[in-house]
Image (cartoon, rainbow, N blue to C red; front, side, top):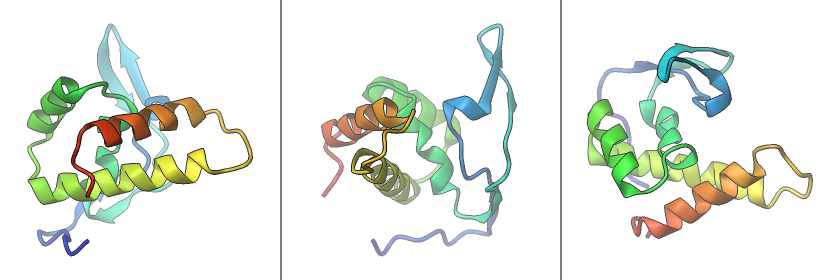
Length: 114
């Protein structure tokens, strides 16, 4: 909880989710919906590691490509846990419920939550 982004602020999207990524021929072609973008800590954009990637190997490939430090990944894990928990406990069904349940399972399985 004491971890914070200490580098210069960077642009973040704020809602990197499967529905905001456009793919053509199996490759990322565009990112859409910048309604929550801003500058600061990029950790919020790494939630995709748990909502899209399945298993440690896929997350490792993603993490290597992104190249951010362990503390940023710890904060990202916190963002992912927050999003999963508020979705799972919401009494109103959401289209993302299955995605967030799976993300919660991934978060708990990776053994990094303390």
